[in-house]
Length: 108
Image (tube, rainbow, N blue to C red):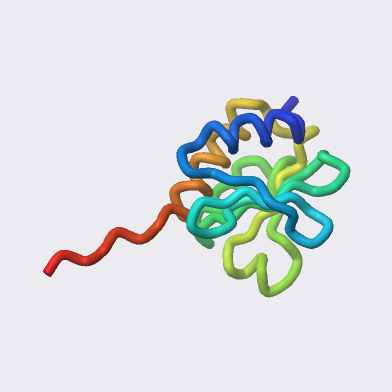
């Protein structure tokens, strides 16, 4: 079973990640926020593409579900640590982190 502390350690190990307050949550970001940790440390919201969100929610509905609003329609997905292995957490973090990397400049 994964934990909020696992998330913190794994996220900060990803290149360029910083930690900062985000309303009542803790945000982890590179160029953009890619995951926010709930105050109780039992869940986090990840930024996935809508397709990635659908895949994760279908594959592991006990662990993942869309955030219930417009954010959810954009791919933001809640993960419940009680139903998540540390390997699944690492995969989710790496997926979300890749979306938050700075955009590469277009070649001319």
